[in-house]
Amino acid sequence: MVRSVLHELVSSSVFVTFHTYAHSGMTEGLGANIESLIAQTNTLPLLYECMRPHMPVDVRQSAFGFLGDIGKFCASHLRPHLQNFMTRIAENLNSGEVKVCNNASWALGEIAVQLKGSSHNAFG
Image (tube, rainbow, N blue to C red):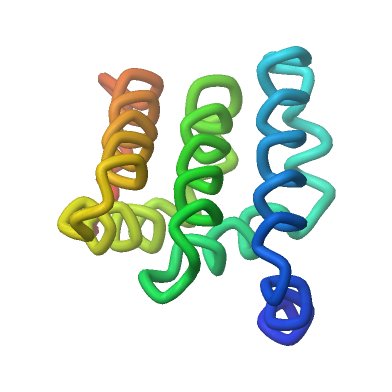
């Protein structure tokens, strides 16, 4: 279902990009208070789909920016999905798209800072 909804919406990458940036701004504004909203929605699966290498550059760029904000303020919600998100980050670091690479590496850094010292191993 997530893919079919996203497929319909991605025909307008401006729509997806706008909403991703809006959610990112809400995350910055609310800080840790965003946790309950992230927990109660399908935000993470939608965000994951927006990071697919075939998605438009602006969609991926904004998605990684939002991922970094989530990592910064509520990384605990990313734990069950870390392996998937790390795969998406790795796929996009070599994309040749500077804006995408920049946001993907920033997101990785924010997640790493928040999970530093954690007993969680993202890859097993």
